[in-house]
Amino acid sequence: MTLRDATPHDVEAMAAVWRAAALQAYADIFPPEAPTPVLADMVAVVGTDLADPCTRGFVLDDGGTIIGLVMIGVWPGTDDVGRLSRLYVDPQHWGRGLGTRLHDAAVAALRPMRYPTARLWTLRDNVHARALYEHWGWKLTDEINVVYDEGGVVDVQYELVL
Image (cartoon, rainbow, N blue to C red; front, side, top):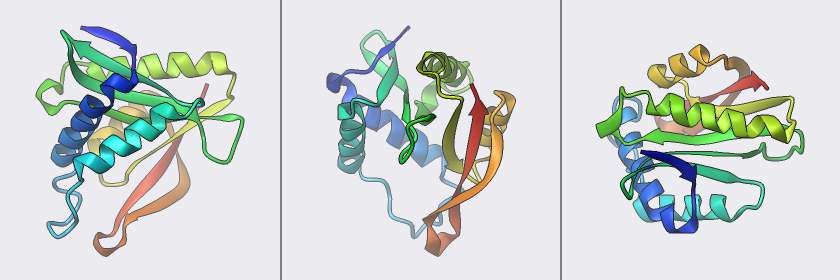
């Protein structure tokens, strides 16, 4: 299994991993009437992210199959805060430490950029992800972002001193 930089060729596979992980991880967070993520929309988002010169993506490549991803860059609206986003592992590979491997690579890549801190968003009710981020040293801020108002689904923000 190889951890490597993401390329435009990886976009569809990255979006597919993101969708599979989100559908499983968020099944009990979003209400049944919430719209299901559309793969084509997710492909567009990942493609836009990778096209941004301030964004870098990493993938875990298992013999030509993408099984995990993470993105880093600059926090929107700033030039001195790093961003970690889209940390997802294919659910068939959960529990193997792959999220930690992706996270650690992302943080290691952010440090030379000399941002004093990095931020991320995660769903408030995603207790598993929140526990991991807190274990990795991320601290909860006071910021929230409404993701799906009808279901009361919100993101919470975390920050890490680099």
